[in-house]
Image 1: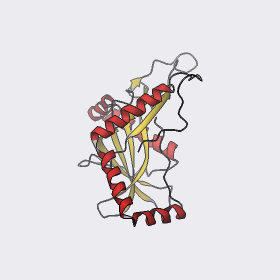
Image 2 (image 1 turned 60 degrees about the horizontal axis):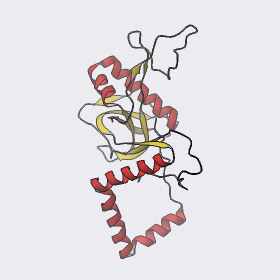
Image 3 (image 1 turned 90 degrees about the horizontal axis):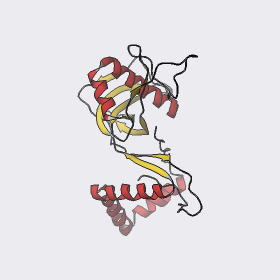
Image 4 (image 1 turned 180 degrees about the vertical axis):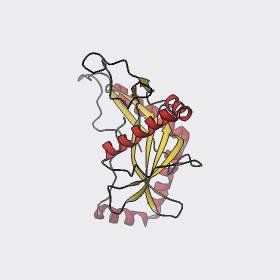
Length: 230
């Protein structure tokens, strides 16, 4: 699972400074140029390539996850008062590992070298890897503020869930449990609706998945900061 970015919040002092800066025409021009630059697909590819190389030099395997829209589940966050409408974007990307059935359980009730599994499907237990991104604020059809979460699965996992209703339920259960555990929210599981004509709510949020590959000794290049994804 990828690490979810923490909510970005400005202090009142920082907000005042930003408002003052926006009054400066030169600053607005530079800001617009920056936004246009990072929005260019070629610049985005170059940025991802450079970050991947820098991470590799410090012993970290980095993969960018760019979610492709799939389908959307509408529900409500009931752990907040008042409760808030929420959308769960079920997405796909080949950067996430595929789902796989776990081997039969060994004596003692444990599957050897198995990762945590979903409930059984026709007697099988599945491990379903996924990636999460923090909730983003979106609006519903009536203009009310809502929250949307991305849960990204491998494209083959997504295909299987679209072909098999039972497997789709496992994927949905995995997505809901993952969001609830990681972001400490609770959904109304009695009111979950598949929005048939909607593939995604909000703006797709790329994320960076890091995995340490080896120890970096003192002779290797080290970066004095963590590299964020813009």
